[in-house]
Length: 104
Image 1 (cartoon, rainbow, N blue to C red):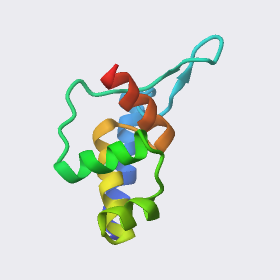
Image 2 (cartoon, rainbow, N blue to C red):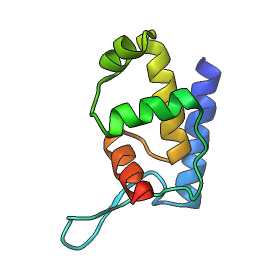
Image 3 (cartoon, rainbow, N blue to C red):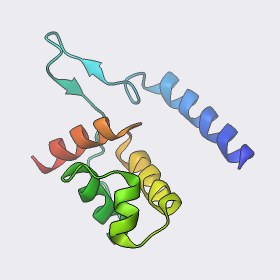
Image 4 (cartoon, rainbow, N blue to C red):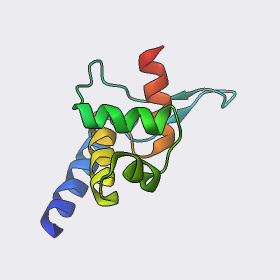
């Protein structure tokens, strides 16, 4: 686990050097609009899609999702982490903006 954390930190530092806006949302002049990095095509598993909709459409917490799907909360956290990585975001707010932008 420690090695993975170090590798992930190094990867994030590399991405920031390559594309400084990848992880950081940029506020537009009036700060009403936030620009996020959204991949053109995001492929999710059935469970990841389920959890994504529960987060973005219903605003459910990890524990609420875990209870609804009869999963362990750590499993839900893992799925959400994978979704964050696939969408190129770092938190739920950015994920919701990216999801809404993708579906129109």
